[in-house]
Length: 72
Image: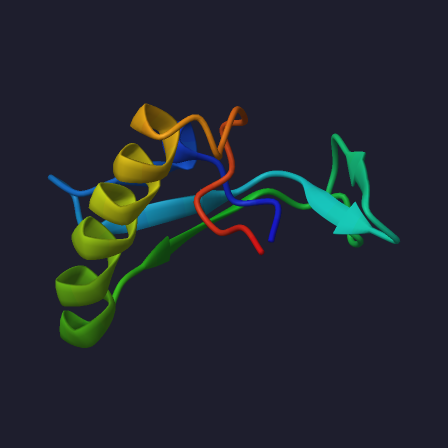
């Protein structure tokens, strides 16, 4: 849930895990204090642009005002 738009690199096909969300509070580190880069599988590379487009629509509608990729 702490994944932010800036953590996603669709050109490289990867995301960077550098923070965590614990009990709705952002932490500027992961549980293990180790940042990591994850190469996305083809399915994730297909879905992530659609999620980012959905997020953009929610911003335009005034329903999202944060940098998180996923929201509820």
